[in-house]
Amino acid sequence: MRMETKLMEGQLDCSESAPCVEVEEGDRWVVVRDGLADLRLTGWIVAECSSREHSGPCSIRWDVLKLYRTQAGAWVCSREYLTLYAEEQGSEDGAVCVTNEEVIQFFGYSLVAKRLYAAARISCAEVVA
Image 1 (cartoon, rainbow, N blue to C red):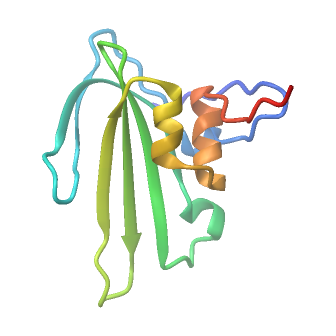
Image 2 (tube, rainbow, N blue to C red):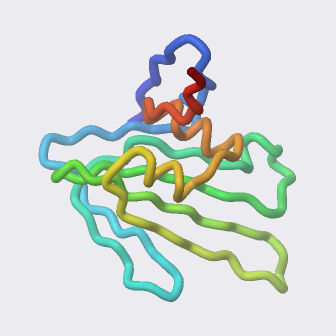
């Protein structure tokens, strides 16, 4: 089920690659992490963005970023690095975050990450007084 994301002025459009799934009790998810315990959660996927969609379908390396919200209100971040090179291996990473700042620290400031923040309505702008 895809829902359109309503954008605030100045936000980047990520509606095509950011499905929102809302179920009253939440769905069960597993975030796979290389070299660490996987994360099991019950909640909702808030946003999803892929750098392949922005680099073009001929991309041979790309990232898929996903942001979940647990029933308890924590954020769970997921980053998958995918490659079509036979001699390379993809990787998966994830983290549990309490604040928006921790989410931003995990994903960083790439164009794909900023699109994810826009879809999740997380402000990543630096405030200048």
